[in-house]
Amino acid sequence: MPGPKDLDPSSSPRALLGAELRHARENAGLSQDALGLKLFVSGSFIGQLEAGTRRMQPDFAAQIDEILGTNGFFQRNCEAANRSVYPNHFAEAVEAEAVATTIKQYVPLLIPGLLQTGDYARALFRAYQPTASDAEIDELVDARLRRAHVLDAPTRPLLWAILDESTLRRPVGGPATMAAALQRVAELARKRHVIVQVLAFSSGAIAALGGGIKLMHFSDAPPLAYIDGVGTGQLVDDPATVARHEFTYDLLRADALSPDASLALIESVAEDYAHEDRAH
Image (cartoon, rainbow, N blue to C red; front, side, top):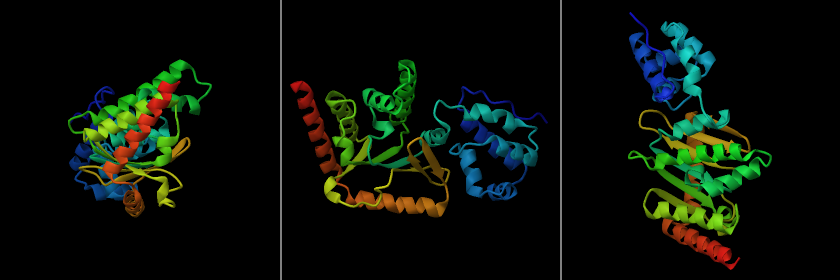
């Protein structure tokens, strides 16, 4: 019987690789739990690979080929499936958000990437990489804006973003850039494309002063949490750890202003930036 054909990198290779894994596993008569047992991982992790929410690493692919007798198929196609313009620590999280049904995010200092304007993103990337060429910065900005198209899709995820008030007050790129950036957030909230809340300074101590949280839920795989820092990040699938981050997010949401009050504050600060820009 002929084996599966190599994947076309232009046709959602991660999803195709996951579909082929499901097909090969079922042909071998193994459940997700049974295959996971042979690979020393959970059945839910196998489900995440099949759903395309987790990245298959080359050494893992080699083991799958050996167990399922797929003649090197998964090892050959791992490179195409894992190809990404994003850094390794972030690529898997970006790919997961593209297939998520719900994204809940708290960002302490920045507007979330999915909500950023090009000028805002450009100012951030230039601050992160002051010696990068304009072409390199353009590539980074384009990649970030392409991510945002997930909010335009008919099956777009529900995005629930909690912003710290410091995000509104930090003039990234100057008054004009901030005015446009906050107006975009407000516009998306008014169109009911996203839910946005603001953690006001008056909240005092909050549950996640140490960093940001992104929680992603899927229709056919367990939830994931992504925890990031400067130049690093970790995608977490341990159920107890994810549940802990869910609880932290719920505490933040309880401390935040209501969506209506948050929208009013965002629009007010945007107008202040616009006045400041006109004054110059």
